[in-house]
Length: 193
Image (cartoon, rainbow, N blue to C red; front, side, top):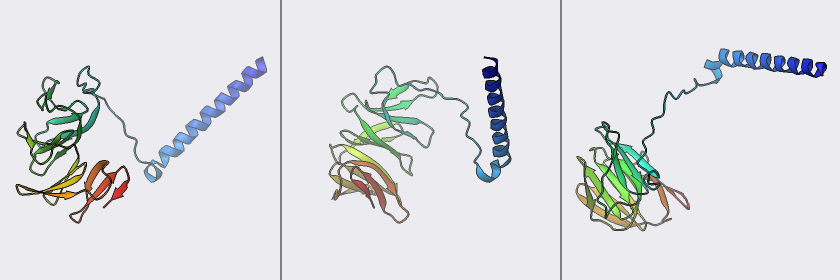
């Protein structure tokens, strides 16, 4: 029994020495081979309530005034920074799944929802009458807003919208601008450009 204790102590001592030796080597080479570690100082929880659908947050955005927007399975909400409470930004008839949020170069918040497209300007939310179908993704490139829905692509120039048929997968997940007035489109059937 005494030998087992002695051997265990020696093994633990060697493991500790080895571990500290490794740490010294890593720390001495830190600038050469490692990034500095990220340290999270705190986490602030912002529950949207007891409803599971409200807490199923799909997209977040921060507008040009610092207001936090949350698109959830239950609808669109903004965070009151003073009270810490969430306020519904769509009326009860329009509350439902929000798929994307986008803040354009003018500070307007665009909302891709289950029943069409909305915009929020100065915290007043209005429906844009281009479709009643679900809108999946929103992006802007060179000042032109592009909206992707189930079957169509809408492009906004000035105050007018043009519509094109969606020539590929209708399961759109994300729309990202490239550097040449085009877009990358992530879908359920691959990546398109």
